[in-house]
Image 1 (cartoon, helix red, strand yellow):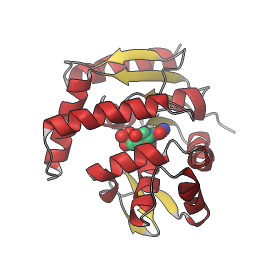
Image 2: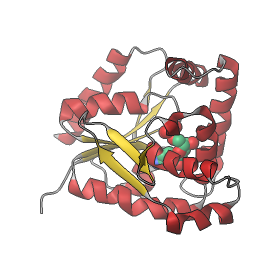
Image 3: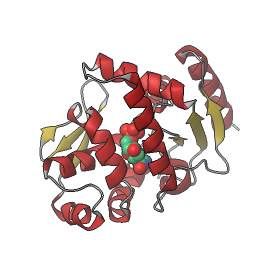
Image 4: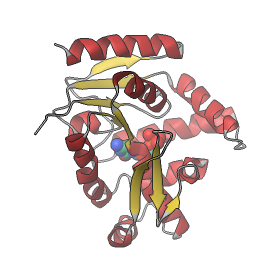
Length: 226
Ligand code: DC
């Protein structure tokens, strides 16, 4: 069996994880796995079923009937399916972010998704982004990056992303939500957002995309060939 290479990218929301990981995956010929999208699909299910996302027992009760699929489209990008429907865009709604932050704190949800994430890394060279990839999902990843930026920079990126998607919001609301969600993701008991001891900290505050990409690519190549 060939050993596949894995790169873990963790960090708070809006640090640029998915944009950068997607570009890195293309450059390196790795599969990009957006684990936030998988959690978001569970958040969407709770939302659609009218389940209180803070009610751990009710969220857990959704799991046996949960029909989630992850597929790579002709565009090479990850698409999420819920009950057979492509929900890749639907999971990006602002309201779903809050739901997802809550359901992802439920230990049964994390257990339910853990093996699926690991299976992808066993069968492909992956660059996987999330909150607990370097600490829990792939503790033996070849390269671990912890990507961060100031809350203001991260909120600005999220705000621009939401505007591009045509969602009505304002910067202050996004900033407040970003800060609240980070607190929630960091304070939860189950697999909280945390920098792995052997992860490289990269702060992208004020950096252009090209600059961050260059820094990451050099680091990754150096570590993969070390
Ligand atoms: O990366 P994102 O913003 O799409 O993630 C949405 C939520 O999912 C976020 O609040 C934290 C949660 N999440 C998680 O708990 N563990 C992961 N590996 C990825 C995301």
